[in-house]
Length: 168
Image (cartoon, rainbow, N blue to C red):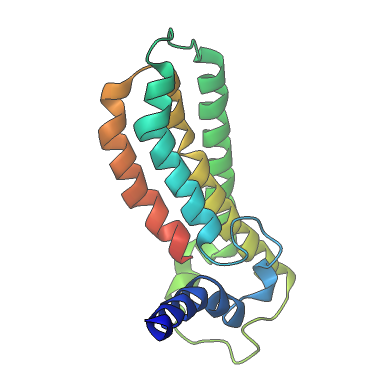
């Protein structure tokens, strides 16, 4: 039994830590939620589900809904601005999408550190942050006691946001 437990522990350690250390891209090592494997992102997604599904509605049960017009306006304006910036920068640095069809892999070191490569890494990081930022609207629903809108949103957000973020 001890050998089996050790084997499972070893496998989990490899899957959640060692693999990510081996296959790590040094250009993104310093970025939050990206370093150290999927555990940070997985923890954030679990906290999101727990808060939106159980803790938040329970905390708000005997309270009045919050008035969140100004925070929601700021959230929406910020979301539009960041996504516009992301779109413009992505279009420019991906040559308006043409670079995605370049199937000739570069002969140079894939972990080369050029200014354009660092910008592309930052763009991917911004994408990951926008996926996390998109989860805030469900928090607004919880705080405004719009629980009827949460169940479909929560499962949809997890399907849409969690899997791509964890596998990046």
